[in-house]
Amino acid sequence: MALKGVVEESFPDVLVRGEVSNWRPAGSGHVYFSLKDAGATLPAVLWRGSAARLKFKVEDGMEVVVSGKIVVYTTHGKYQFVCDTLTPLGLGDRHVRFALL
Image (cartoon, rainbow, N blue to C red; front, top):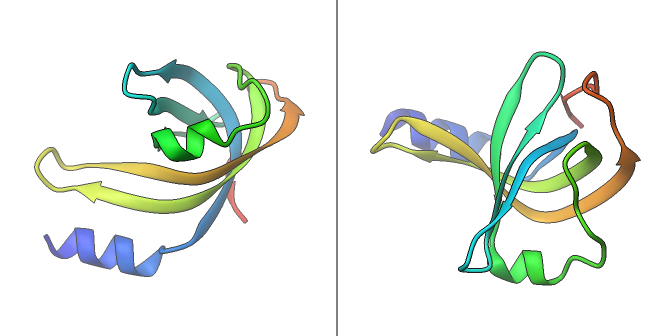
């Protein structure tokens, strides 16, 4: 529980740049995917309301910048990036740099 508080309070508003991988729209309207670079993968979600506001088609391999927050799910000991916005930068390759901006 302490880790959840530290992570979520320390990173309330974050920008992440990475390549979209495993873009999976769910029946609920939410979209699950990963942001990655050559050495790291970050699980991410775009909730239904945010996904509905997208003005472009997202595809695997697309380089993006997302804004949002990191959420820790203590039950399973996992974390996920909850995206508020997703902005395309163009098509990336598998060596896109993954960085906190």
